[in-house]
Structures are given as structure tokens and as C-alpha cells.
Length: 272
Image 1: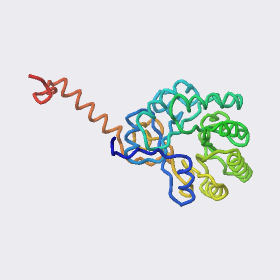
Image 2 (image 1 turned 30 degrees about the vertical axis):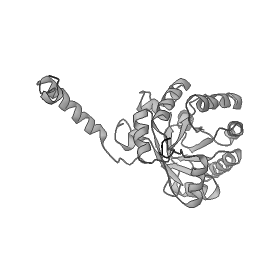
Image 3 (image 1 turned 135 degrees about the vertical axis):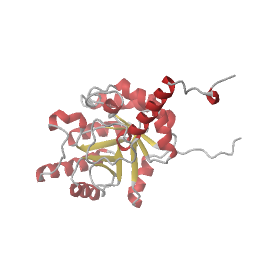
């Protein structure tokens, strides 16, 4: 029998415990096996298979066209690459808004077909019944408030949410409602840092910020943004930790040049 220790994947209990112990939670997106493996090797806490793949991988103008089959396909790939991080998959647009029953059926597909440990959905108190339906069936739910990309037309663009007092009060009530419904964590996107801090103090489940200040219990970024791979749009809250876009272009240009000039392949890369 192998003496190698069994790899243990993080669970919602680990994530909740991190908030209790004051340890910040690291979250990044991934959409394929190789990137998921890289993030897992770095001990990322949560990998989110976001419907942002519609824009950064599939070339859509928004997240709205992303389908269930596309999300399932990419989540399966991520699950094959990561074995320690908790994997959360976005429920795509109209896969959960029609009815709680349909939402449960679609969430169940991720649990049965992809090995994801949780699903994520957008919306406030109006989604509480849906969150309760899914969690009662045993599937953890990460909620999402603030700038909710699937409602981008309703919001009138990619704008900070909760700046006015009435909107801030509603978001706080939404957060408490989602916690009561059984969500294990809450993403706060493009929310004023003071409001995000108040929500974080007011609920027992972890908050994951993206453009919501340092007081959140954790942070999430789209990996293509923070690595400089996707350059069509760079939100204010994105910090670039690398510029892979330039590195890739330089490497490809050098490859093209060496092929044209018959420098590659050389003796070291050929068989005799």
C-alpha cells in the first residue's frame, strides 16, 4: 500500500473556519485543466469556474450567452486539474431564475457531472427561496451581490452598486436573507468598501470581495485579468501581477521568425 498521504480537498467548513480564525480566503477563476493545476499547486483556497469564461475564453461580449453545457464542460476540465482547492461553478444566466425547482435540477448537474463542490448564483432576497431549495438538497451555494454581471442591462452598465443609502440598506438586508437561506459565502462585487465592511461584520458567512475593499474575508479576481492575458477591458479593481500577454506575443513572434529563417528546428530539436 502506498504511504503517500491522501490529498484532502477544502470544504465549506474550512472556508467558514477561515473567517472565524481571521485568515483571508484566496479565490481565482480557472477554465481549463492546466490553469487549475497551476493554481492548485500554489495552494489557492477556492477555484471559481466563472461564467466570465464567456468573455475571456469564448469571446462573447458579456456573460449572458454562456450555456449550461459550456459551464459543465469547463468545470469538468477544472476538476480534473485541481485536487486540493474547493471548486465552485457559476450557474449561467436563466439556469436558476425561472424556478427554484429548475435551479435545483441544474445545480444537481454540476454536483453529479463535474465534481464541483458548490455552485454560485446572483441575486438578493428574491433568490433566497432558490438558495434554500438548493442547499436543502445538499448542494452548497455561494451567493453574489453588488454588480451582478448577469443583470448588466438592468443595472445600466458596469457601475459601483450600493452608493446611496437606500441601496446600501437593501444590500445589507439581501446579505442577511441569503445567509439565513443557507448560502455558505457571499461575493461582493463593485461595492463601496465601507458598505462591504459593514456587511462582512453583520453576517457570519465569509464575504469574498472583488472591487469591495480589504475588509472582506477574502478576495477573487479573474485569472486572465490578473495575469495580463485579457486586455480588452481592465476594471479599476484589477491588479496585474504579470503581463503574460506581452510574453506570449514575444515568444510567438520569435517562433515565427525562427521558422521563416529556418533556425528552428535545429539539431537539438531533430532526430537523426
